[in-house]
Length: 228
Image (cartoon, rainbow, N blue to C red; front, side, top):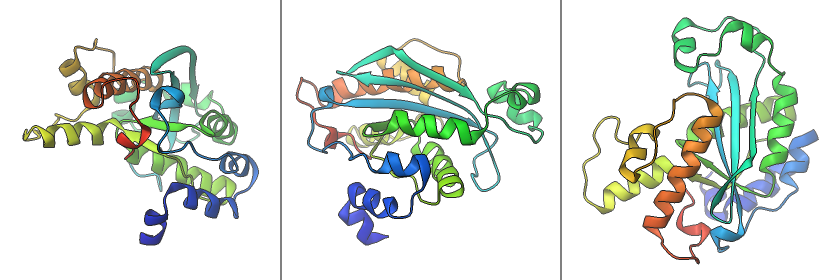
């Protein structure tokens, strides 16, 4: 594990490619962007998943939403959203949060159909999320189960970036400070309704652009400045 971290994401990608099957094989065959690349030259995919809980071993993906950042601008024409079919009953507490009912989940697309499309949209790009453990761990669990190998991707995590900003300013982090919708007002960003995968992806994209302009201003900011 330590060796893999030292060698980097591309080493992990090539190693996983040896075992990958189907759409994951095609995804992993696509090289990752150069860490030294300018952010404005990249396609960065802001992604959010809504899930039935926090543990990918027993919880399920309910929906996925994404939007692409290209040229350091949000491309609204790339917006994509899918509800994932869940056959078991969804806990009432979970429905209250994401508002996806049993009927809606039952009418969704099977994960085996959604995941290949998601991987295609992520191939060769950088994933942008808020709290990467959710998206990374749930997609990884699904890839291992369906395609026989781990999910590997270079990632920007706005929660980790916010923690970095707080530390640089010697600010104490209070409970809730690093939540997506508590960070946005700090950058004068509008309020959106939380817990819709697509609107949360858009909210994350906007937050990243605002943070990037503050952390590394100018046209030549590099991907390496934001990778987590």
